[in-house]
Image (cartoon, rainbow over all chains, first blue to last red; front, side, top):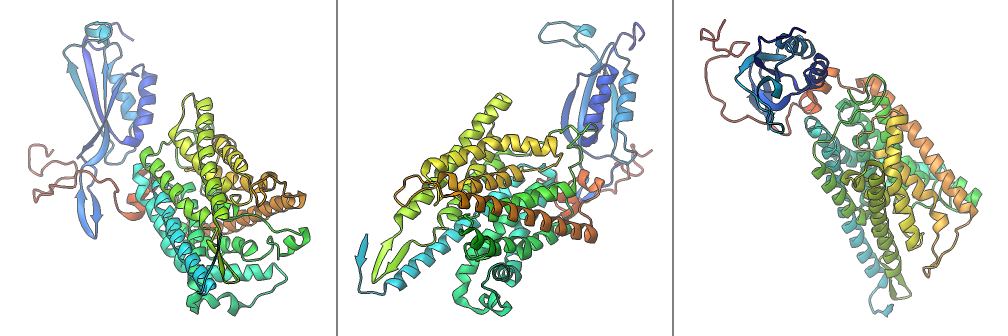
Length: 121
Length: 454
C-alpha cells in the first residue's frame, strides 16, 4: 500500500448489484480491507430485460428490478482495489449485474469521536 | 344427568351429535389458513405464493382424491389387516350414500391436515408438479392406509391382527401419530430427498440461517391452528349426547377431559419451549414458543381422553421442550433442511405423546392408573408400524415424482423465487403503477437516439 493511495482524497464507491451477490461482495470487501459499508434495497432500470408480471390474466411490465445499493467510503484503501473486489464478486456475466460509480467525498466525520477527514473514514 | 323424554332419544342424540361433528369439521377446516400463514411466514417473500399454492392444492385436490379414492382405501386396508375381511363394493359404498357423507367429511378434514403438513418441509425449492403428485398420493394412499390400520378397525386396532395378539388396541384419539406424525415424517423424508435450499449449508456443511419473511404471519398462523385444534381434539369426542332407554346422557365429563388436556398441553408446550429457547439462545424466542405450543398440542392429540390432567401437562411440556433440540438435530446432524420444522413439531412430538399415553392413564373418575405393559408395547408397535409405512410409502411417492418431473426447480428458478418461476406472480409487487406509453427502451435503458444512447 502506498502512503497516499487515493491522492489524499476520500472516495465513495457506489455499487448497484444483484441482491443475491451481496454476501459475496461483503466477503470480498472485507478481504480488501474495506469492511465498512452501507446497504440499501433499491429498484432500478438498466440493461436487464423487463419482466412480465401478471394479475388476473392481465400483464404488466416490471422494468424496475430489485437491486441492492452498496456505499463504501475509503481513504487509506486504494479505491481501485474496492472497485475490483466488487467487479469480481458481483459478476454473473448476465445483463443486470449492476453498475459501480466512484465519487469524490468532500469531507467526513465520525460521530462518536468527532474525528474529521481521512481519520474519520 | 338423565332426562326422561317422550321423544325418540336416539333421534335427538343423533341430531345433536351430527351437528356437533359438522361444527368441529368447520373448525378443523380453519386449520388450513393456519397452516398457510404459518408456512408463508417462515419462507422468503419470493416463495410465499408457492407455499400458498401448495396449501390450497392440498385441500382442493385432496378432498377430490379422498372422496374418489382415499376413504375407500382406508376401509380396504382396515379389512385386509383384520380378520373381518372386506369387499371393494362395501369399501366404496359411501360414495352413493348420503347418510355416509358427514362421516366422510369428518375423515376428510383430518386427511387434509396430514397432507398440508408436508409443504412446510419442502418449501422454497420443490417442483410444483412433483408436489401435486405427492399431495395426491398422501390423500389417496399414504394417509388412508394409516387410518385403515387404526381407526377403521385394521391391523393396530383392537380388532386387527396385532391388536388381537396383544389383547388391546392402539390408542391415538385424534391423530397425534395417525395425522401429525404421518405428516411430519412425510415432510422429513421429502425434505431429505428434495435436498436443502441453496445456501442452507455452507461448504463445510454448517447450517446458515434463511430467516422467514414474517414472524407475524407465522405466529398468527400458529394461533389459527390452535383454534382449529379444538375442533380436532374436542370434536373427536363425537358423542355429545348418549341415548339409552329413552333417556339422554350428556357426555360432559368426556368432553371436559379432552378440552382440558388440549388446553393444558398447549400451554405447557408453549411455556416449555419459551424456557428452553431462553436457555439455548439467551432470550425467549417467539417462533420457538409458537412451535412449542403446536408441539404440545400434537403430543396430547392422541392422549386427551386417556391421560390425567397432569399427564397432559407433562406430555405437552416434554414435546414443547424437545422442539428446539429436535429441530437442531435434524438440521445439524441429519443435514436435512426441514424449513418449518415439521418433524420436530408434528413428527417426534406425535410419537412421544402417543407412546407415553399408558404411563399417564386416567380412570373414569379422574384418578391415575397405569394402562398396562401390553398397552405400552402396543403404543410402541403402533408408532413403529405407522412410522415405517409412512417413510417407505413417502419415499416411493417422491421417487416416482422425481422420475416423472424432477423434485427440484433449477438453480436459477430457486434464486429467482418460486412465485415467479413456478407461478408467474409476485406476492408483494412494487412499482407496478404508472405504466405509460413512451419511447422504446434500448437494452441498457437509454432512449434510442437520445443522449444516453451510445
